[in-house]
Image (cartoon, rainbow, N blue to C red; front, side):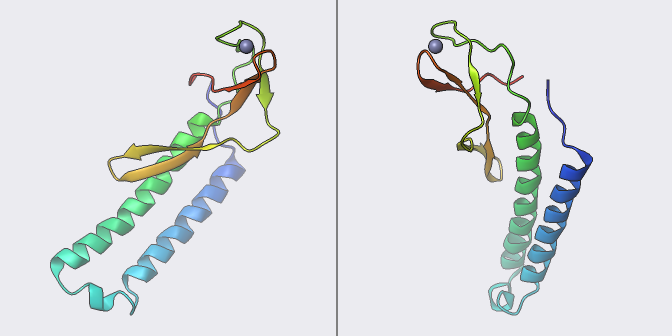
Length: 125
Ligand SMILES: [Zn+2]
């Protein structure tokens, strides 16, 4: 049961993406980088780095949308079989996946077993 982004959340992400794209464009053509982009290889490196940065943003948004799927109701503790509770009192810890273009960061919703006093990460839906 994957929670999709709402229209408003998607609009916020789109604005962030476009702002990031604008920043990458401006940096690529900045006076600061001009001396470091003389050869084809230097230009190639900078331009593909900019693209990778935007790709990671999109991948993070995709992974986060999946991970934000509502915690599984009725998810029982794998140790004691007791009921678990959603942990929304504190922000979920950040995790990272290594993609072909570098690390992407996301958070996973946590649940807790009151009996075992431990945090749990339900398997992905
Ligand atoms: Zn337990």
